[in-house]
Length: 344
Image (cartoon, rainbow, N blue to C red; front, side, top):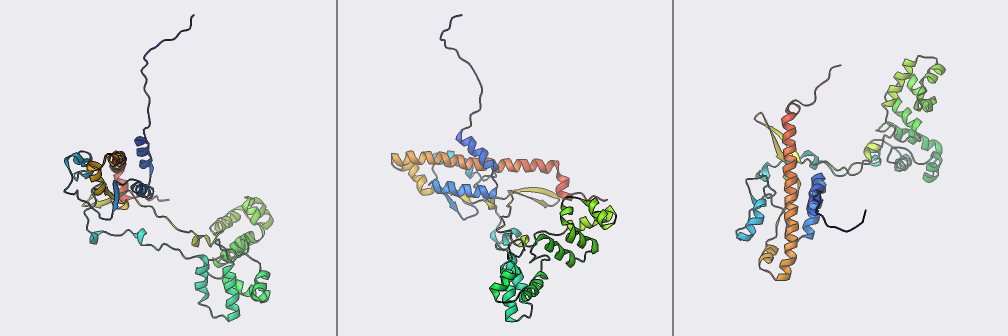
């Protein structure tokens, strides 16, 4: 068999991810917050786009016939396009509850200090209590020893112990503990737990963590059922009582879709107000048509990017809307009645 060279035509199929297709896939996966940031970044890069504050923008009268061809898709008010915003008046617009919540949470130390003001303490006791509160970490545990506090506040250890017990009586239960065992004991006593849970916390916490329930039952000479019942009570305690005050800045989820019931019918409403409104910049649009050749060449490339950006956002909107309408048709009962109540 001789080797040689030859030419032949072979027809194959393959999928090529163009930059526009990659952008469309990326935008479709974004949530509202990520898409808002992406839109703002793109408008900073592209002079043909600008962010506006108005809820609804009308197409200016100076749009020429050449512009109408590539702007008509975005300015068609018959569609749910990007150029269309809700017609609801500002007075009718209700701010969601999650946007009215305070941005800053109270820390565990601020929460304890506010309770300290309700007590009648001497200046010395107040100084010790404030030092103890300042030494409590975000999880609610005391971060230094009694002797260190006594040295820093020029007081005796008995004075510090007395004020520590006072702080440990504050809300939330278990705060100011020096270790996990003491934290659970404080919570168990505040909830009025019986003798067995307290004894397990004090003497068998390691065995409880390793599920050695039979060992605990044998040593305490009681049934396994009683030990398991005590275990269930202990599991309801919070090992980090201060963590609820240390969540930091909470980012609330903004919905893309709102489903409302109106006259017995369920309506799918796109939450367009969650995204920044953008429009074509009239100045650079005129330069694109009547400017110098160098400027027109640069702006033509930016116009293509802006066109694909707006088209991608519109495709995302329509895709999300159609998916939600399909879900609504198949699970209408869920939206009308909610989750079923299971009776045991």
